[in-house]
Amino acid sequence: MTRIYFNEVVTRDGFQIEPEFIATDDKIALIDALSQCGYAKIEATSFTSPKAIPMLRDAEEVMGSITRVPGVEYTVLVPNLRGAERALESRADELNLVMSVSETHNLANLRMTREQSFAALTDVVRHVDGRTPINVSLSTCFGCPMEGDVPLAVVQQWAQRFADLGVRGLTICDTTGMAHPAQVSRMVEALQQQLSHTQLTLHFHNTRGMGLANVLAAVQGGITRLDGSLGGLGGCPYAPGASGNICSEDAIHMLDAMGYDTGMDLSKLLNVARHLPAIVGHEVPGQVAKAGRITDLHPAPAYVAELKGAAHD
Ligand code: COA
Ligand code: ZN
Image 1 (tube, rainbow, N blue to C red):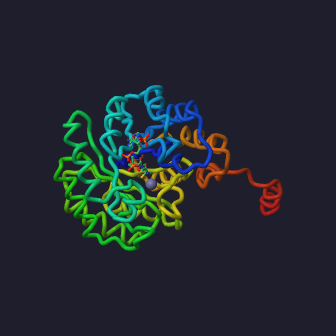
Image 2: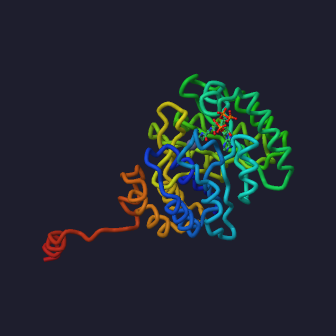
């Protein structure tokens, strides 16, 4: 059975686009509940500028108060050296550096050119110097909402530059749900061939309803690490039209049904997911938490028993 490793991003990617501040205690309680569900990794928060992402201005408090469960890695998003110092101070298990492969989106999101971001992130890698594993999330790999198509060769070039710096992993992000399954198949084939020593994670948004189809294309192409967001919350505030990530519990439910080993306790996860609307104050896109699992059956109406009885008479 193929093992699939899930990284839960709801309290980072999921919450950063929410309009109402979510209380620090609610974030901590949610991360603690998610820690009991079997995740390989949880992206707990980001060490970005509190002006840019006010929702995550409590990153230190969150990282300092969660209960760390052995076997779960607690990772944090980091845009620059200042963020890396804060993340190290908070004893994050991994630093998830971020830049966009689209010049326009990188300027919109991080206020730097790609070359400036690369230089800043190179400084971070040197500064960390192997003390903590580093992952790099590359945004807009499947298309930029402002520039359009991003050639595969451009993604490969940035991926290679970070692989050459010796980072442990790369996350290939479809920031605004522009990927389609055929493109995903081509991308994962090319990158796995190119980067055999780098952990590859795929990060999809369901903006155009292709999220689970893209998950399937990735997994069938050999990818074993996925990002997902509880309830399907999420989106980058600096990407026009961004909306929710793939819904973790829906993706896990699908892969479980197909016989993949996700390592997840889906019943526990669905219980956590059912509390999410109360935390964010609105309905969420996830479907399995509402519909139940395919194994959750319903009693037949009484007249069906009568009809069955009549058929036997
Ligand atoms: N943590 C806390 N504060 C930070 C910071 C960090 N990592 N990096 C910069 N700042 C502060 C600076 O101290 C400065 O504060 P001041 O105005 O009180 O003096 C302010 O932010 C601006 O700093 P500057 O270095 O000029 O950065 P910038 O304005 O060019 O912003 C980023 C660059 C990357 C810090 C900012 O755009 C950012 O945090 N973006 C978040 C991107 C993000 O998370 N997007 C969604 C996920 S992909
Ligand atoms: Zn995202």
